Image (cartoon, rainbow, N blue to C red):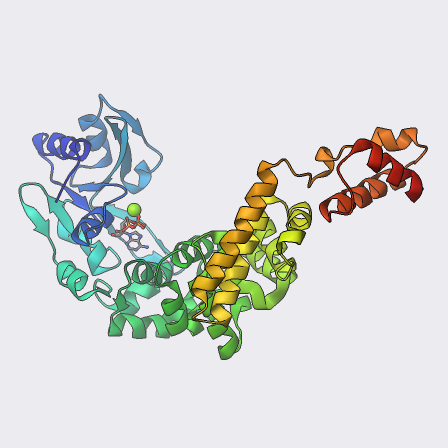
Length: 405
Ligand code: ATP
Ligand code: MG
């Protein structure tokens, strides 16, 4: 395993102080799968106060210390170092009643969710794999450590984690684990909206999302009841989803499009998603069929704005691809031509907002237009400009405005 210097240094310091220390979890798994790990987590027999002692000369962040995690900055890189833990009894299908520290690595690994996530690695001692994680990486399966039904009862969020990992690595979910997911799906009702939302976001962006959403349809309907749709609608949705770029506004719009803009927005609200996403999805669905031909592009820019015009082009492309498989290339050519037209309009400084219009409110006031009529007239003028019925020229617009009085 290729271990960066800062992680090696931390392992060495802990070892020299007489503690066990290993790389653990995602980084060991990712390395085994030939993926570059995005962070390197360490687990150790050192207790929190002992870790603080070992890293006394380093900058540390102690927010997770109660749960045994100390973040240490080594060469400017943050490393999460966590005391070997075993979880006590679980409450509410999500949280262990108490965190118990242990000096035993196997205990720590046995509380982890899936075999592929329960491996540790030491530069000299090599791989520690009590539960067959390496074999499951080879066979491409997600399997619970221990009895799957028990593990999902302890923490039902693991159901959605299984989906996310399976979709990301295009793994299958092992038979017993899959059965336990179906048996224990009702426990997802006890998981907070925020956690469901963040796992769903991770899942949707993963390569194999559509496959998981197809196989475990019922489980998703349990997790997010508003998603429940007739089978054929769900299948169409998943086709669109598979054709989408991996951007959240597009993915959520694809998933929710049969509900329409209003209901889609409510679903995202109930998942406590950020407002920006909510608004993007709302607008994309409200204007799903807005024509984005070349002579209407400036109009689209006016109605939904620059970023959303490009998103809508992508979404419409995914819808078209899903509707007529085999036409992808032709569609791609057409949509990239449309994007070029939009880019060219923007580059030429085309007017598509009131602030770019060559006349302002006070120009209209000077003509004797008053109150609400000012805003209305400005909008009418802008509309004429974006539809190509008028130039963005001050004199011409003033003349038009006079005629509109
Ligand atoms: P990612 O690449 O998505 O960060 P990861 O494996 O690092 O994947 P994290 O959520 O960062 O996943 O968690 C780190 C490790 O902690 C996991 O590999 C797993 O061993 C353990 N873990 C995390 N959440 C749970 C959970 N809910 N139940 C059991 N073990 C968990
Ligand atoms: Mg991680």
